[in-house]
Image 1 (tube, rainbow, N blue to C red):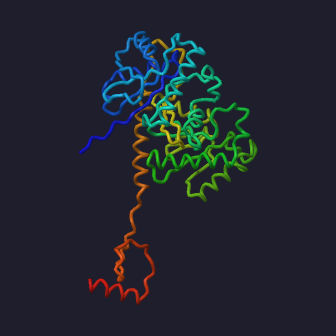
Image 2: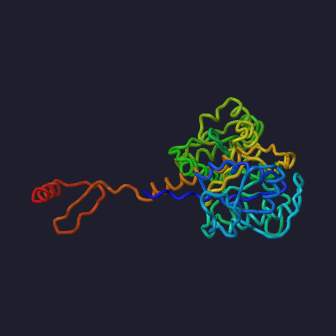
Image 3: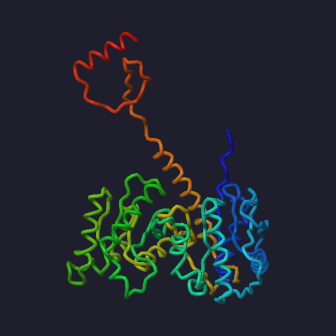
Length: 380
């Protein structure tokens, strides 16, 4: 039996002054993970070597110039630029931001050329990465524009027991309410439902929808969005055979553990979903960008400048991001193969006029047809 080809995992270096290289190198210091995938780190060998020496991490890598040169059984580090970049651990800088962008941009080009299977991104600084080439609130929006092929992205924070998706993502709090529309909720819930089915192989997902206002609006006393927008959206989703329930007040929903009864939770805004998630998920949370052709995950922490260079960054979230990307890729392949060739109809009909045997849809057969069919079978 032919051995299954290892999944190629592209990993972008992220901000070079943060903990990105530390968590990447710590993950691959254990060579056992190479039995599961073939990593291709997009970055700079010089910067990687600097981090490795500064943090005294025992991890080796092979330098390559093209993704096609990556070899199984090795940690492949792809050179994305030759310029000298000053590393100032724990300090934000425009240089570090541009180094992160060069690695990310090369990864987007290579994905379009089919050079790898899944993408894992180390954290960036959303301020220092800004440039004429990058005018986005974060990774999610940039990747959607670069390789989304017109599909809409959905941010999902996930671990083994909880999946939280967001209707709005990187918005100022003052802009949230006007961005909560029935259409937006239906769009995000539809993407979420499809992702739960295809990416997580949940056949009939149950989605909890959170309210926008405290106490779910208190019957209009604290806001009318629940009555006028969220509840009508849930009713319309039911008509689309999507099992959505709510709206639930976020504090009681998470505090009482109600989330354990659902396959996914749709939050209205960033902190409403992420604050409880990060409290519950601790160090094993993963950020997954659903809805796009590319499978992209990342650890659910930032650049962590406050601990960069101290050797204390926990690599568990990065490791889980790699595992999750691989799992989702396999789930999609299994789901798509199952959906591609539906079972043929089981009614086989042989015609008297000499036509070849063919499959036919079930139909009402008259008494005359039955007699003719019986005669044909007997004569055969």
